[in-house]
Image (cartoon, rainbow, N blue to C red; front, side, top):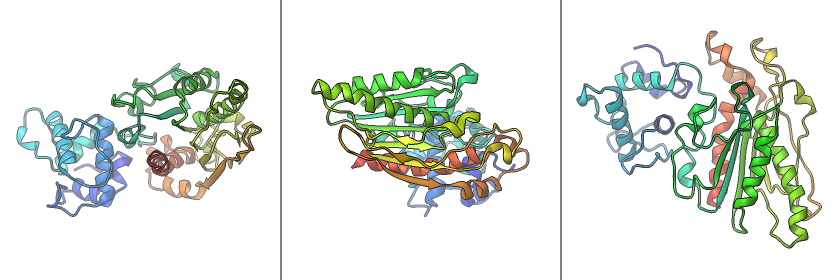
Length: 349
């Protein structure tokens, strides 16, 4: 068997063991499974659009139960159309080889947005995501909700769900226009109710633009207060490596007072200092909070410096793969599970 190429799979010992011809992973209670390996399998099934026995995306809980086995069988039926006996719901060497091919040979850096959180979104939650820069593909500022775009794994397979599609928007990040920023603010204002939670998540250019979104909401609240309308508050803002290429040093990293909580994950090494194929300026920095003149609230900010972790993570990639890797990209991969955990916790509270 060839070595696993997808970083979603190749960073787990149990999955590498399966790929090398070791015992297959199977439905509990037949196997005391490695939870991380199962979570990676569940994420892969969700990202490829293979759902559980209930017709819903899998809950990424690390348990190889009947729903996970059903999703694996559906994948096997697709991967081995002329060989029905392969559809046994087990993850063996032939199946993981096909799964690795389906995920692609380039590292899986971008967040698998929606798949681990879609089942947790409540009808009143408002979730807005802005990607890294999408200008080169002509999608900067474009509404990408449910569409294939430069982040195809994030948008092409977002499942339509009651209460999810209505209050979820994804936009292509831009360094050339503020169309997505304006559209995000308009969407939040239109959907906001007093019992709604507003949760914003972005990386790179998208994180920078979400800082702008929050600043606009703070300004908008002035007008809302003047006419006696409930003020919009952002329950959780997640910013991953807010960057703007050459203009990165000039980014204002001040979080507006309408934000209650900000998880800010960043690394401080410009991509070009490690890899000449990476654009300079691809790094974030610590945020600070500004007290709201309307409410007096100052955002609670967790600044998580991931510089060292990102550099260590880069050592896991081959020389050929490094052309796709920068500390910026490695940081996004490492940060995403923490971001998803924070989002799920906020939704559940």
